[in-house]
Image (cartoon, rainbow, N blue to C red; front, side):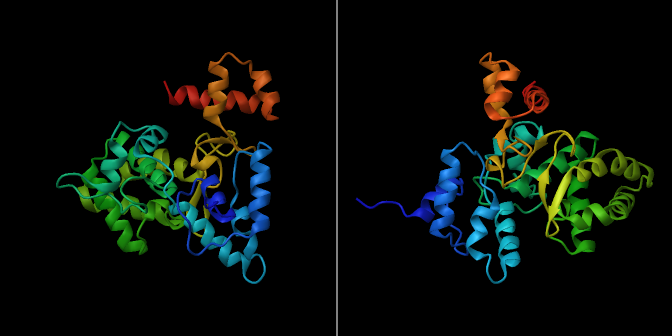
Length: 276
């Protein structure tokens, strides 16, 4: 009976589901990652994947590994619906298209799953939709922004956060002729706050802070398999909720995971509001 190789075991442990042909993980890195997982560390950081490349151009490899992680399939479409707080079936329609309507932006993953970048796009589109923007207009704005910034996915780019306001306002002004006031208001009240809650790596959104940078909750493909975690711990917020629903006191949960009670409370507020 054949036994799995260390690299394939780490791939499974990290939830990758498939090997990256460009990433070779050393045996030492693999053993260390397994030991940490057994010890209760519930996240895999990209450094563990790229550590065998540190010598001779490690920054390039780390950048490549990060980009791979951002495009890696992590979520079902139902997961994206829940995290982005859009109605059931929305993420799949927006990312893949439906009927005569094309996708709003090309997804980075196979048709059966979604990546972190896909998630960020659905969140941004959902916020515009909540403010009354029809999908046709959103598609046109995305296409207009793609042309001006020469980016395939402008909504997840740092360039959009820096220079997107004028483009967004001008796009709406040209496309629907209602003046610039609504575009400016929506940018300031909807898009700008959301974009400020993103961190970027190599021009691409790499972390989302759904409660702001001081709100304890972090979403990144490098932690918790891409699901919300308590920042700095890797503990998924859904695990905190499960313990709380099982009648474990907050102080006990905090002690078990070596967390501050305030971060446990933040995780519960996030999860309970999410399921409300």
